[in-house]
Amino acid sequence: LASTMAPAALLGHALAVGARTPATVALCAESGRFESLLFRPCYREDGELSPKREGVPFRLTRNVMTLLSPLLVDGPLASGMGAAALALSDAAPELAPYLKLVLGHDLANAGRPSGGRPTKGEVSQESGGGGEGGGGDFKTDREIEATEASLSERVSSNRRLVLDRLIAAAPSASPLLSGGLKSGSAGAGPAGG
Image: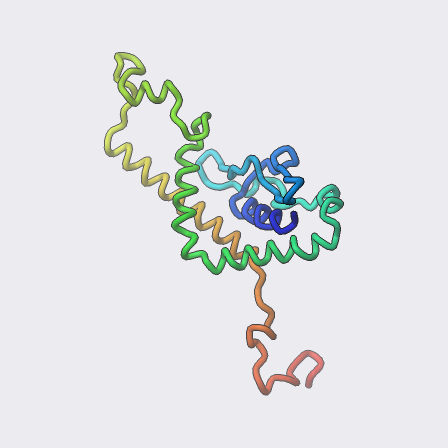
């Protein structure tokens, strides 16, 4: 459970997913897998990801603490979140194109109530059957280019935000592990002299 909850919590934080409540998750009793049923980023009116609207990035409530126990929280949950953040931040260049596709698709379909599928009214307008005079609301090439440029700018900004949040969540190596101590500097600590 803790090992599947960790990456979901990290990605929820990175993508500014809101409404993460017990009603939006499922727990498989046989395998212990944790699944998010509603995993949608929070956007402001201008299409930018809105981390402030998500409230608390990851709440370790008393119920979750009781479910997992301190042993699982300090062990698999914490190490799973750290490992996932480190792996995703190290793979940021490879992850960026996928984020562009996912965030672009999500943002382009964010205003549609049917989750991205065109409604009957939208289909009839696109085929020329809707609106006054049967013409529908068609955009000029310049309007379409401006909309695409604006969407591209928002997607790039959102992608940077997600990658920055993943990198910030990744643990950093200690100076001892990364070769931070140099030979000859052994006695130069605060108590050295």
